[in-house]
Amino acid sequence: MNVMNNPLRALPSVDALLNQPKAVELVTAYGYAAALAAVRAAVDDTRARLRAGDSAVPDAQALLALAAETLRQQFTPTLRPVINATGIILHTNLGRAPLSLAAQQVVMEAAASYSTLEFDLDTGERGSRLIHAERLLRDVTGAEAALVVNNNAAALVLALSALAMGREVIISRGQLVEIGGGFRVPEVMEQSGARLVEVGTTNRTRAGDYVRAITPETAALLRAHASNFKQIGFVEAVPLAEMAAVARGHGVLLLDDLGSGALLDTAAYGLEHEPTPQESLAAGADLVCFSGDKLLGGPQAGILIGKKELIDRLKRHPLARAIRADKLCLAALSATLDHYRRGEAPRTIPIWQMIARPLEDIRHTAAVWAAQIGGTVIEGESAVGGGSLPGAVLPTALLALDVPRPDDFLARLRAADPPVIARIAGGRVLFDPRTVLPGQDQQLVRIAGDLMQSSGV
Ligand SMILES: *Cc1c(COP(=O)(O)O)cnc(C)c1O
Image 1 (cartoon, rainbow, N blue to C red):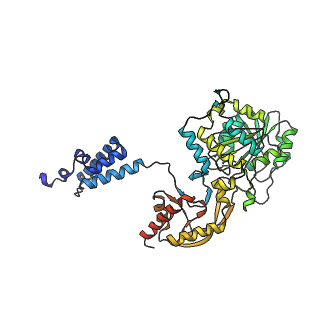
Image 2 (cartoon, helix red, strand yellow):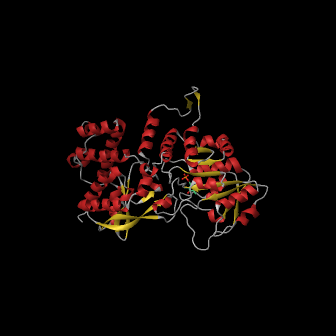
Image 3 (cartoon, rainbow, N blue to C red):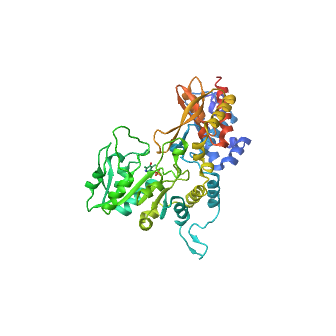
């Protein structure tokens, strides 16, 4: 074969490529091993293409551009910040609650330094990590005692394992729900080794149903918040206070899985009233569990509050060690609870700021966006999400973009840096200012504006 006609001969060698200034840049940015592998892959792939009959030989710059793109993709973290323009405040897929400024700061400090995680400054001896959030939780909920674990699913498993292993727990058929991400209340209960006893029907359960199901094997009655599921029509559930009377009368415990556990009254913000942990305790629940990153607005955590004697049993259970909260979580949770103790939560906790944000203010932002990006401002609804307040919405104003291929536009928003998550309704791309954090405003305008320009709308 004529050497001059063999395109493989024209392909630069890996060594030659590595001497180019662009390659030196890649080595500096990504390290020698990764840069070498990417350059080698670019050459190998191109060689395979040429062998297969392609005759276009890329030059050194084109090969290095290929390697650079490979490296950029490889080194982009899979867990990264996004702009939530969906209007769903507690978006489970987008990480639920963003933290307050104070909570962010204490996480940084706890991460960067040694701390009093398990150290008692007064005695100079070993302390307990359990004390940090416990006092705050007692203060803001009025509970006798509290315990923080990894998440609420773990809290429920711990409570049932420690208090009902091998015994019966009675729950209404109306509360045997699946919460999302495959979390099914009955399956979680089984994991704990407690035997599930279902009472009532899907739509109606009465106090007498619980009473008839109680046997000497019964350890507890459990109420589970139906989370993102709502029944309407011919429906009856037993109020918690009535369940407490039944439990007390028969010497069994009453456990309440609240799911979200709002510490503030959601009804003050034009929403339905979400049950609070304080109310559950007042109604007579012995133990209440809820999440840290739903309506509490803090980090992922499972919070258990209630009778001291029961919390002490949970603390001693071996499972408690396996599902304990880490120092970053405890730091963030303490700072978040501190906002409630100071009575400043609606002003300082991002999810409450979003819930409380006046419609006029949202409309103004949407109008500013429309002036910069294009599109029109329309009325719409934001959702609370996060397995709380099913179907509950807040009136909002949206920026609506008419673009030729909305699905395409959404994909290009996701490919931006940072990715922007929007939604489509009625064939239009919609952006809800309510869930866009203050510092992300300008980024969103830049990204959506550029895309509008390049799509020539
Ligand atoms: C969300 C939810 C859970 C699970 O809480 P995580 O903190 O996500 O583990 C459990 N029970 C109910 C009723 C919930 O709504």
